[in-house]
Image: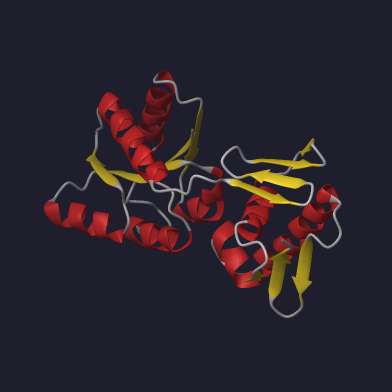
Length: 219
């Protein structure tokens, strides 16, 4: 499981990261800014989020994240009053803990929200188009039986399209889901990643450009 701790206090973040790793979580990253989470959320299976971030209000981060992702979120913050808890849960948090956390309890809560989220997911996570196979759960791609190495962003772009194969997907939707924002810079980045993705797949016609709108993953 890939977990990210979004916390601006380096000491608190270090303690949480170390605690999770000690409990068997091999992939645990640390981010200090809410914007960094919004632009990289596709890389993670679960999020531990502080509300008092230096760039964006934690409630705003939650609301923006929920527009593009259902990744499980456990809020970890110093705010423990009822109003804060209720507001946070209504903004999209799956669970809530007050600092300082007991690591064992944090781990149990994290595992519980991930289990609940996975229980609601469709059973099928494999998309097959011709000789191209995408395993969305395993984050793997094969072409003619051979594994293809994609970057995080390349896979995320392919996933947005493949999950809706045969349906035209707008550039704005791809930018929002993969980068978390629509700017000139992210639009250029999409063009670069799309070119690299097409080159690696080497299947002309698999990803069709819909001029003036976006792209379509062929059936």
